[in-house]
Amino acid sequence: MDIFDEIVRLRRLGQKSALCTIVNVNGSIPSYESAKLLVREDGSMLGTIGGGCVEAEVWNAAREVIETEKPRHLNFSLGQDAAYDNGLICGGQLNVFVEPVIPQPRALIFGAGHISKSLSKIAAMAGFETVVVDNREQFANAERFPEAAEIHAEEYEDVFPKLGVHSATYLIIVTRGHRDDMRVLRWAVTTDAKYIAMIGSKRKVISVIRELEKEGISKSAFERIFAPMGFEVGAITPEEIAVSVVAEMIAMRRGADSNWRSLSKSVFAHEQLRATLLR
Image 1: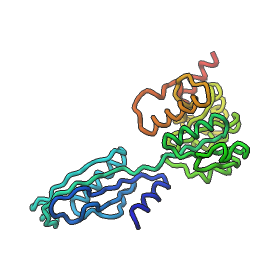
Image 2: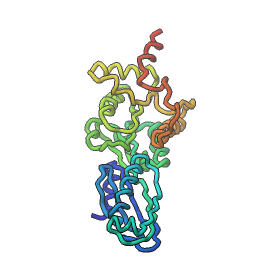
Image 3: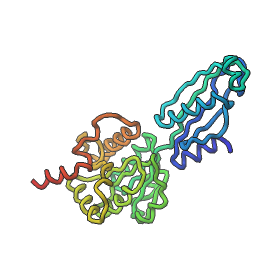
């Protein structure tokens, strides 16, 4: 199996990996410059950089790189004693670059209205592969969304099984009404999506969640929902709203460590919000 073909396959599946490459060699080593080893999320490997203790240490580093998504440089000196102990009578030096291979993030946009048009464009510019879903063909089409990788003009429930949601998937719910929002959110909370957001006021969010709770969906299922969606920047126009949402997606993607998800935005706090609204 070719390493690069495997990288493409893993990225399509939404799985991370680490590519380890010998980038510099001095003296004799049991491999060669440019030799590659691919380490998958499950720890399995493809290829080799020579085996022995070096490869074992590189494997450990690769697991860390997969977790942190930050590359590392590793330097090894195969001294005669250490080399002999491991069956490698070489005595050379090598440098290994371990880089994360991360799936392209996918933004699944439910609803094909004005906000979705701007969302798809801005998300695509920010490096997200965009997919648009709407049950109205006159809205969900390539003319309105030329940058979208996929467009589905079908009923939402018919599209869900086709979407392949994984940990690099971002779900944005901006349909034409409460009922359709509820249809999508009901499914969204059962997925492994990295980010789930829904448009609407706090009152609307509470209303939708109340109805889904009546169906038996637990409150804990809504803890990771971003609603109202986007950073609170006073956005009014579709373009401004799209910028605020994509900024929130980028913060999620990059693991921004701050208080950017405030209590007032978190659906986990909807009981407090409900109490405020009922005063």
